[in-house]
Image (tube, rainbow, N blue to C red; front, top):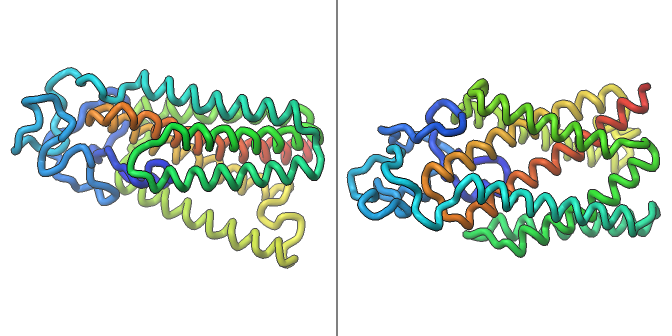
Length: 294
């Protein structure tokens, strides 16, 4: 399944078995009906990364693995370690920025600059054919500086907002993982199409809203105000973040099932980091909105 997450958009180690859940084996007989992606690990009817004797022509794309994973294949442990390293870099950058940069126009400018650099690094990685750990960790470091300055700004006005946003992000992530693992969400091609359509429409509306605010047509942030309307928009954004998480989880599950190279675990960690940053920022705004209305 081809994720809307820019990190996964050039990959596609996935299947459409109509159901999502950990430890589900790829279904036999899958004929490549997923409209989002062709599995790069199954070319010409065989998996080029399969152990010797398991990539013969005639083996159907999506057939269950018939041997233990070979050395050099991505595992869940690899994803967890890389994700911890990437998120740890974000956290370290945020802590240092918070501690060393006082709230001031200069620090705001530095935050914007860091966000732009992080965006460029993310786009460069997106167009790379293979994961580059230096780019991913560089993105994490600059994103951390941005988050540290923004979090300190929110904390100076809404005491404790960053801590509450972290807890909220953890709660959303945990709940989404629980729903995914229990199979309560069916991550199918149709599910992805609908979710991606909603996400693109949301982003388009946000861009129009930003332009209206910049040109003075909309006041107080428009749809992104700190009032009830802003809260509704924030909740929609967080739900979209949860949607992206389900696609990320499925990409990871499929990468492991299809024997993706171990290096792809960096890509999985990158994708999760991008999504979690999205959710944290929206949660930070939401906490501030509800604090204002207390």
